[in-house]
Length: 135
Image 1 (cartoon, helix red, strand yellow):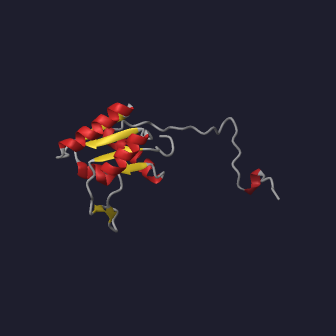
Image 2 (spheres, rainbow, N blue to C red):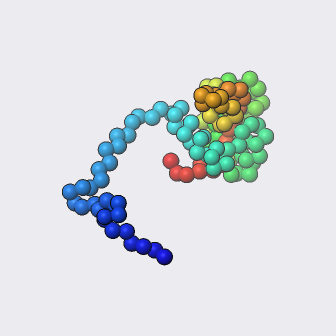
Image 3 (tube, rainbow, N blue to C red):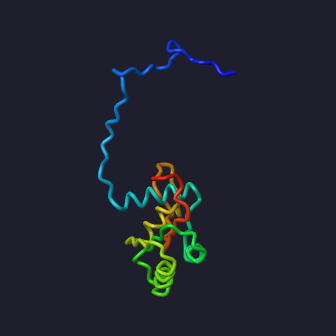
């Protein structure tokens, strides 16, 4: 059933002269871009909790790796509840400036034909329960 392919059939035979050289230069990545990547991978792996109810339930169960809170939340009880739960459970709390941006990063938006976000819903809190693939 298995057939061994020879070099004539399209395989490239690597010799000492033709070693693969990775010239990948790591570029500096800012914190917002890193958060976007982590949220995107967690969203694909179905590991995000968005909104107060989902975040509170996940924090109380202790299944949270990281909590992201928007600083422009206008409800002080909301902020204090999430902050207290993170402190109680020993979960890292990260704060971002805009709830609208956090909602967009967490997938609470529609994309138009050009791939631009439309109908973005803000989210004051997002928790990561599963990072997905390692980044």
